[in-house]
Length: 273
Image (tube, rainbow, N blue to C red; front, top):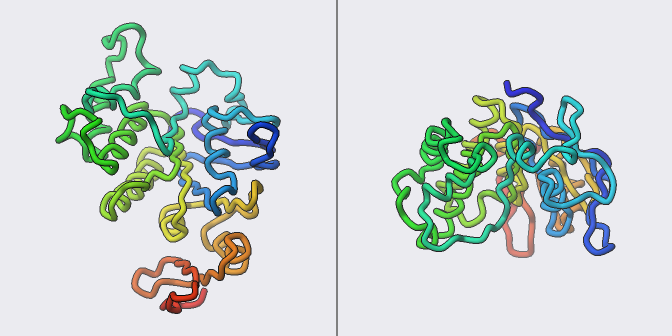
């Protein structure tokens, strides 16, 4: 296991221009584990994740590694060797190949020349392989579809080879096949490589399927944390999202499943938990 893998935010207060967005949130992203952040739009999920990635400065609170090292005290390069973030959107460079964009992930390990990074090519090739973008390595990224580009950015994060991987809605723009492949990849990184994975997801069923722990955010506060079965509880979800949500077990898969009930939706075929 990498030394001191993991990351924790303690009593974080986050805001924009005097408006409080996250109020006293504490969250731990642990090694060899997937932690999913869920909640309605505007509940503070992405802001909290960006704070853990040092892209949003806390008004108060602490961000630290398991060894007690404050993340806020590290240099940018040292922090980037320990934590990487796949954000919701990034500017797409014109005329730059997929391989070169994936190579951007090696920036914490490079000096002025690429030969300062002897492990770079292997890391880049591995990242492209596991995300399924090797065949498009020489294509320009501005020619790619949204789903293809999302996989390239994920490969860039993987090439950075950090012990903590933060992902903000990584299945956006992806078709069903690649959504499942990204979820499987998160589990593989946690199970096989002991990476600490923190991910914002809108799909509660995806969170239930992939996460070891879930944090449910409600209007800037963490309402509950725990296993999927502990957090995805019908009354709490219904109150948080403002819509009736039933929770049960999918008889086909045996997995916990949620179903929002609207005016024209059918009752779910779920076994009560």
